[in-house]
Image 1 (tube, rainbow, N blue to C red):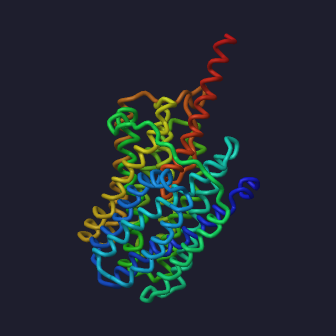
Image 2: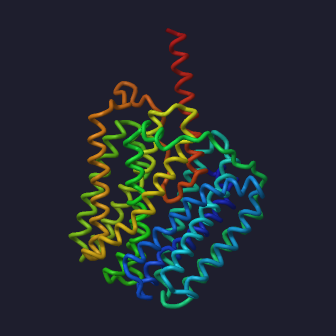
Length: 430
């Protein structure tokens, strides 16, 4: 790990600063929007607009890099992000903020793709898993740190818009000054959504549902906390709890997934997450209970993305794995775009508690569909060999761009090829 940090510290530091700024501005949308008088449904549309832009940016960024190179893409997107973040208080209209959020999602996803291509290119087969894990961890830590800055500021003024703009600008300095030439991202063989569904219906539907859960948790959590009447410091602690829970439980869940039928673990985690969400609906009057519920909710839901991805790869040919990652990004993005407006409508009907009811319903849906799929398909799990498949990789959905998933897919491919080689060797010996 020390060797990884030594060679990629500039990138890790830059992405940490970027996510601190992103964490501040992301939570500010719900807080400042409520102060400006935006309705819950308007705030939900603003939240989903980010994921619409993110989806487009992850698709277009590789083409930009291939055309003009990494440094120019960085410079262009950096200037746009700084300008967007500082523009929110200039035009406090819901339609304007939706446009800002689409542009912000587009630019940030482009930044992630550019940074991750550098990380992927600089890593070796022996260090790629460690590099990816360190990268994801720094992003989550940055998001948590951003909530601390939010708690210390005044949401009615300009400071909490200026600080993210400064941090985003600073984040590119170590990256640009330390960048090394990286090759253009090559397009992978496409895989249709129908083919992806046929390969793993459970992963396909699960990814769609989980997109709504992730977007709902992180786009609407500030809106929920504001409607609940939490102070700025309490709101920051509440949102941080989702990320902290994900950091703590991500690896243990992944460890178990390589030692049992993944579907059982996915169904169990989703069902547990639904029960936790229901507890949030009934125990909203206790702040400390909310912190624990948020931590469990984030810890149970976040790993499901990687679990579903790993389960799909259990049934994919090696050459189809990279293309499948892009398809799952698209499916998850559709769910992320639809999630916040649906949650916003529910919150408008039943009050703030609609936040938890939506999460409970969607997670229960994942669990029920998983139980149905277990009656339709035999498991890839083999008792005596633990798993006749490729291992789980620790990928967090909040930062799962095309390049991050491609790096994870390379690990899957390498593991699958090693297993195939081992099987051939055993056959020759027999």
